[in-house]
Length: 285
Image (cartoon, rainbow, N blue to C red; front, side):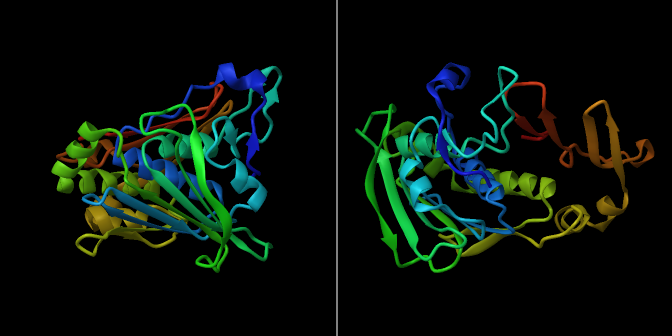
């Protein structure tokens, strides 16, 4: 994982003003991809809809104190390996770390507990928007040594989600089962794309384990678990590349037409844009 750095002002105009986190699944998605970028092999996600609470814990490389100071500030990220390539912004990986957390701190209280690999101390940072209805910056409420995180990795706790957006908050709380269903679908999509990572999703309120995936070199075990052995056996692996374009995955034969579109998952990577764009499409969403 690259270190978190502040971007030069010369690239500000090439970026979006902020990442829009409009619902709970998008919040969970951004936090999971930050963990994936930290080379995590195990990610635990816990949600409580009624309490507007999310926790994502990983065993990734962690964040140093110097990086933690910048974390959550606008235009800071770990995702640009080289900021400019031939006059253009270089591709990013799975999300702008600083940008996502900066946006998240505008609509919640964000607590980050982390221990970097090879470093003796763990640290904690708590951030929130400057003002209740402010979306232009975050305030660091706390930054110091942490005695709760003893192993390498990072835990991000989101409290009071959408506290300054009462309509969105009420909508989320009034449809708890639907929100949990959408969060589960989001985690499942990520698990299918990254089968080598173990993911666990827990509903804190009911103490139900909504999803658990064991690390695997192939998504087929997860497909068998979630959709059945018949679906898994009907799939054939594809791997094609041509002039920089890569197509990989599993697909059924024309004769194995399924009676529903519920099993169509597509991830498209657009590498010819300034940023990598991941589009997740679920046909029944």
